[in-house]
Image (tube, rainbow, N blue to C red):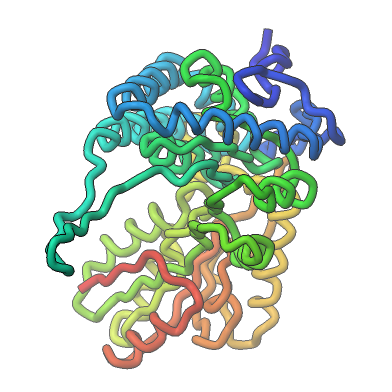
Length: 419
């Protein structure tokens, strides 16, 4: 039996029961081949409502549990993920196109640690000491869980982002309804199988479906008190508008365009290796990817040459190959977006393509690791998140100029300085 053949692993979890979706069936693809892995039915609006109602009902008891009880559940889930590490890694690799060795060595241990960390944090919830602001009265802060949290996880790190969203919310005593991306749902649905036997019914619910059919119904539900999203700025804007009338709490992580500032005195070999690693990990589908390089004029040409050699040496290949460093992009639609962004840049007369610059031939959603030189600050390739294996480099003259450019962005997340 392959990891795809047990359809029971890919059901929704609603109120402690694994059920088939009642909505439209959606195809889930292997981005390394472009082939359909399987089809899964979306949650219907009635099933979304049932999941939220179950979470709301469960909150009455789960929100009053002791930190010990919540920590024990999180530790059990961490142990269960660890025991099933290879299966989770294979699912993540084949559904996302990630190199298998990266998932098993980098991501799974970190995911397990997230649940163990917040199991400990559950015992450390405390309020600030208070002063006397009115005579005869004592003021204090008490930390209480919010209630039902709707979590929308992205497609670039499906299981990792699910862990980041689930662990703190559950540790604090909230109940969660999580919707993974319809592009990469398999590890979240596998997680539901494990969680079913660990958490009380309704505490953790897992749905499947698109944003417009499931996500909107979920985030707009009257009993959802908070929405957590990792995704694009456009999706964040949509959810903020959608939830504003109900004044829901929101937690938004909406991308990045990380500047990398390289001064004349930097170790250029170290810079090239750093960008090779952190600009192209996960095929550049990372909101902290080191993708917007500013090099001081004295070392600009030398750094372009070293970066070109470093980037062109990245090994693309099948996710299961131990030597693969760069896998495919997560979907055909995203491959088209990355291609369009690079073609727009290439159409500018001042842009030089040092290496890459196009989709590779053959099966799958592969885009060659790309370095674009001589980019200008106002270029779209500098200003907009590409979210692919694409790095631009721009020359600067002095510190004031480069700091102004580095901060001239609608994004804010990661940055680095080499000197």
